[in-house]
Amino acid sequence: MPCPHFKISIVKRSQGQSAVAGAAYQSGERLFSEYDQKTKFYNKKKELVHTEIMLPPNALPGYADRATLWNAVEAVENQGNSQLARRIVLAFPVEVPKEQYLSMIKEFCQEQFVSKGMIADFAIHDKGDGNPHAHILLTLRTMDEHGRWLPKARKVYDLDENGKRIQLPSGNWKCHKENTVDWNDQKYAEVWRHSWETITNRYLEAAGRPERVDLRSFERQGIQQIPTVHLGPAAHQMEKRGIETFLGNLNRDIQAANSLMQSIRNTIRGLQRWIADLTEKKQILLDALEQAKEPTLSDLLVDYFNLRNEQRSEWSSKAQIKCTARDLAEVMQAVDYLKAHSLNTVEDLNQAIDSLNQTADPLRRQLKQNESRMRSIAQIKDAAAIHAKLKPIHDTFIKKNFKLTKDAYASQHKDELDAFNKAVRTLMKLNGGTTVENSALDAEFSALQSDSAELHTQLETLQPDISALKNIRKYIDMVMNKQQLSAPGGKTPEKESVLKKLEEAKAAQSQKKTEQKNHAQEL
Image (tube, rainbow, N blue to C red; front, side, top):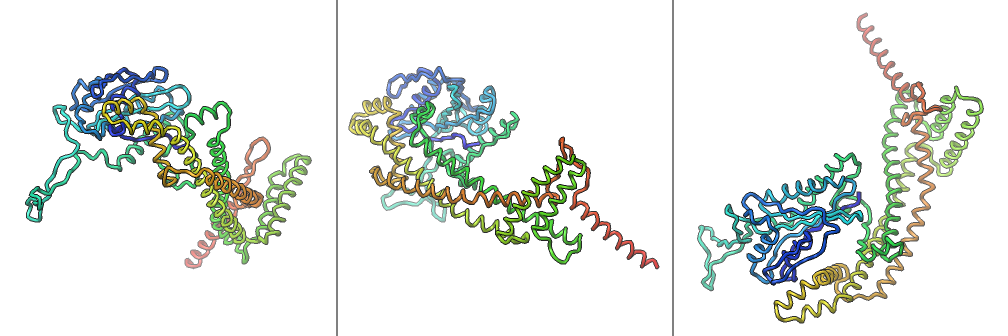
């Protein structure tokens, strides 16, 4: 299953954000903010399914009221750069019945947050567009046994080797700050993701679904796959209306590349596993028949042809002739392939598969690099367009000098400023700055696209060899007891397999030798 959405962020006053506004947005309630003396309201009736506040045992009962809770949070945070709350947005799998979403999110919040002393305010949203999700707001301060907010950090004096305070030249005592809780440690992002992954997979299993989720990145999962690009609401709506977009076309190219690479990779891995197993089976065959030389691949193909004829001994003459002619054509084609590539033994076949893998592997790696860079270029261009569009709003925000008017402007343009800041972060990460040379990026993208098309062609030329090797594997598998032959009507013949006969003969021979030895000792 594709990696579901799971985003963690902090509500920051320094960015004009408000915990009351965040609670109003996800709950659809009309909430009055005592901090800026404004009413916050976002109409979410069409998508709102359920809202709830979960309190730890030591929280004041009054905090079950949303306005009371988040106004209390904002009141205790008196700095202009205070962190107000933690926000988590996560997706529900559509494969799980909707009536189970509530128990899923409550189990998650209780286990990971409320049991640790946090207050969890969550809301389930579902527009019916295939994207059911939940918003969670979490408090950042812990509380004492009376429900009073405790400091986020405390001052701790540094001590010397004698356990005494260290005085600085200024006369002050050397000290440092220590967090009262470790909720902000980065390790918890992984813990929370893994917990939601575990809960989700448990509910999928209970629903009888085969899908499973993994919230790790493709790289961390060891999956050699190129991630697709996030379309965004505008491109997503255009694609839904059947209008092709730049990002949509890129995603389709990435999906095609992933499909081709995965197909070739799986086939080669299957052939390699089969070769390893076949080598072991071949040794049993040699020992049982006590042959001085190993059978050639052509010999095994002839054995396959004979076995097929044996299995059809009770068929009608017409059916025998028809199927024998078909098998003969297939075997001759396989034998011709073996001769053309000088493949005589299992070791030769193993080397051919290894050579095929060595040819395909660098092509796959280069294709992955190309597609990843094309993905980055698409993200840079998308971020640059958002940056250019929203820069006037951001510039107006920066020019405002009075705190109240600045906060009011930030609240009014929250979504635009958030999108602008996200675009800046993307450009700094992928482009090294906000200045973008579109012509150079377009030229690079075009060159990468051409190179990827050539790599696609080269990978596709390997498909005939892969198909031929798969067919040879199928034929030899039948001889080496890897598959059973089926008679018409779906009945499996009761005849013993060749390998089983050989193993029984070997066992009987060994038993006979043991009996002869015992008999000689008795004499």
